[in-house]
Amino acid sequence: MKTHERKVGTVSRGIRCPIIRQGDDLAAIVTSSVLEASAEEGFALRDRDVVCVTESVVARAQGNYASVAAIAEDVRAKTGGETVGVIFPILSRNRFAICLRGIASGCKKVILMLSYPSDEVGNALVSIERLDEAGINPYSDVLTLERYRELFGYGVHEFTGVDYVAYYADLIRDCGAEVEIIFANRPKTILAYTDTVITCDIHTRARTKRMLSNAGARVVLGLDDILNTPVQGCGYNEKYGLLGSNKATEESVKLFPRDCQGLVEDIQKRLLDATGKCVEVMVYGDGAFKDPQGKIWELADPVVSPAFTAGLRGTPNELKLKYLADNDFASLSGEALRDAIKESIRAKDSDLKGKMVSEGTTPRQLTDLIGSLCDLTSGSGDKGTPVVLIQGYFDNYTSA
Image (cartoon, rainbow, N blue to C red; front, side, top):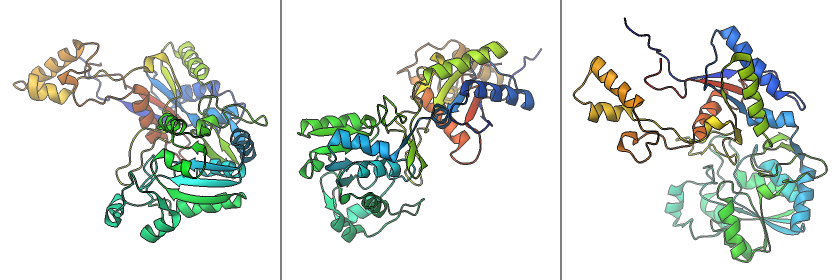
């Protein structure tokens, strides 16, 4: 008798939920939304399914918000409120503009140092080809605003249509602070202008802080050092501060969620109690992928997943099927090839790191891979699916 073979592998479903407000029981809402979707759409939960909750609704349920005034107060207290160097910010109205408004409101002058030709996540100020044509070396050359405009004029972002240089300068002035803009890629360049620095890079912040401290900076802060404790009773994030924040209103930001581990474990337990199935659960933010057209690397959050259940630790341990088909079993075809490959999968080592048969598989953390799939599934607009259910992710060619 021919055995049944499942014809569908990984499935990613966006799960619609009510609009989440501060104080809502998010674990209960996520659990009921997944169970209702399962009943209405006719699919069953299985062990090792993954329920993923976007960080946005987690922070919203926590009420993890902060005002521009709170940011300004913290900046003033930690810097002295005089001339502050603000270096390596990303170019984003949603991600950074409100943070900059708070920083500028907390000091008298901002020396804004922009990396070029693009910011950390790939938003371009100018193309590398234009730098080459102008004979500019971005690794060593420091450009004033006047020199930058002379060489490259008034360019706008490909997708947003915003001239971020002018936008950030106007924003700072609107907050009552003076502004001077330079373009440079070496952290210590800022110390020729001020010894008080807020470095706004995300994934390279530890190195930048170390370099500035070693070069003699008096005050070195990262965005993770601002609002890492509550100010005026506002939200905060003890680990990430302003990193991972998003614009909420013109005068406030939603911070990256805190204390999420209890939430994912609570959802896991509720679903186990309701279905008898042990699903994995994670909170996800930006996916970690790069847009080939705009050259934008999506990851503006400090991590893809700030909390996840134990089964999501580690990296994939997979064989490359086409390698087996083209090499080990090149002489086989049809059912013989299928059976040989299935047997190889069943017999594979528990750790394939460095083995030729795994070459070409994706060497990334499971949470980064799954988070990217979730980010693409849920989108960032009006889909209304802040929860994503992924089924079959841990299946392989032998799964029935």
